[in-house]
Length: 352
Ligand code: SAH
Image (cartoon, rainbow, N blue to C red; front, side, top):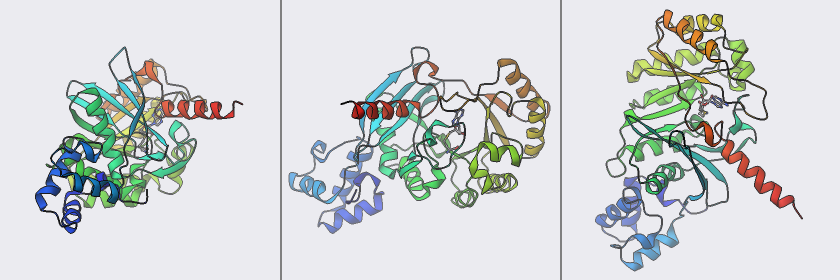
């Protein structure tokens, strides 16, 4: 996008910009409110803004809007998956989940991903591009508008590696938590990373009250390298040291994500080693039965193995929960709705 995306501009910047057009600051406040509270998609929706200024907004800024291409709702638990088309034709996926504590949206941070985790569908086609802050916000805005449900929690756990799109992620968090926007509490935001160590330290220094979720998936350097190529760049010991610092600087307990794969990382010995590794760290382990991806031959651990793994961790006083699988009936693993769509689109192009 050649022009600056208007929804990616933080309040101070938008205010300066609008003033430089010879307008009063209250106009900037009105425009910001239209964008981030009333969730307007176009200048013409801004009914209290004079027509001439609306024209200027069209000329001066890019409007990186998201169009809903598809929406699937789970009959089992009401989970919704949204497929969005971006201004440049790329598609991304986001999820809405209802919990007793509120409505949670899982957003994507990139189109595709370059981290290459073996079990993950989102990385198969590589990275296409980073998302703009406004495109991350729009996933939340569009879902809130379309569903009529008030979003209270946001997890950055969709496609992409958020710490590989650091600056946009930070702008997104500031804008999402801003009182002039949806004003979501920092404590209700979770950012999940595969472990980009330098950026975990940077994030710790921001002293935000968000939750950091670390994708661990293995209890030794060797096994982690097998599953996650990024582990070759950032060693397990260094990742854990960064997590410790994150806790020390923010006081926020770390969540470790551990996808259980049958015969790969789910033995009781794995659980014991994991417990040892995390000893003394203020944390919580989220166990996720791996979601089978068609291109990979990883299988889910069976219920008995999962129970044994969890009780082993608890025996060592490591807090663990089994992630409830939401929306199982509507699209399997993360990123698969998008992948299916891309494959279909390609199939149609190839037809004579
Ligand atoms: N790039 C970030 C966030 C995106 S993935 C990260 O790596 O954390 C969100 C979580 O889902 C990560 O823990 C990821 O490892 C996990 N995940 C990806 N594919 C999965 C699959 N097929 N089954 C289970 N968990 C998966």
